[in-house]
Length: 340
Image 1 (tube, one colour):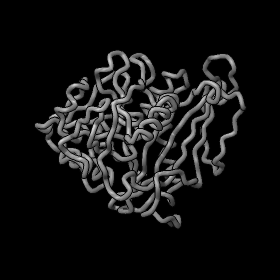
Image 2 (cartoon, one colour):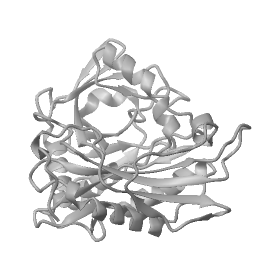
Image 3 (tube, one colour):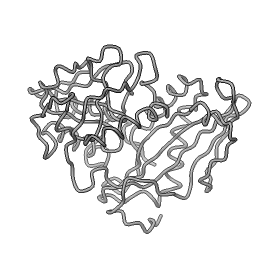
Image 4 (cartoon, one colour):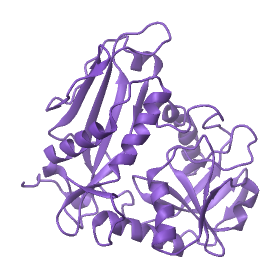
């Protein structure tokens, strides 16, 4: 298929409407077969549950062109699994995981002309989402739902190269111990907006949220998991029941162990031990790893030895290995890379 006439090298990280999106409706206790449609508009009642009580969940993933010219996506089964967990937590009907993967591949295939070419630095961002669609005025779950998948080509997250971030320890809480921090619900992101706007006003790139119960343990940022590297090269990721289980973070931990031969562990990470780490990064779909150069805890600066000019050596190896797996230059573990 001929590619769209897009300046791939200069794409930003924003929304560009593509030709097709997938839509499936849940009504009378069951999901319909779903269709691809050219209409990008969602039409719902003014009293739809999603508008009144934020009953919505979503996922984020990407499609790539590999070095061999194949179009692939990365671990869609884990996105399907996580969306099922998110939906169940918000009393929404689970969209079947096999149908989820099918629909993702079908939507990418329909928008093949928008998948950026290999080497451009750009990718096709894929956003599956679900919401309560019928009118609800009392506080209760909806009875009807819509599951949709949209796609948009996006440029590299780090335009002009990687620059380590400066983050602050936030006074805001991201999630309660028995709340919804472990699922990908829209409401979690809405509550983080004020905190991130405030952080930017104060000159910081991101927030570091602590556990709400004791405010002594590192959790995550508004949209990414933390990954630390000790001074002896061990990879450490925070463990908490209120952290979103990042697919990128889980993949990086496996890469650390199986490809780089590093020791890696998931454990509680205390605020007081931050000065002991050599490197820090934020893991997520958009950038894979965003390096952190400085953490500011209420005026006290913690400067990572990796510095403010580039990624630390271990973080860089992790980044290069995982992106190599995604782009087809490094052999992937079984089932990680799925061809469209």
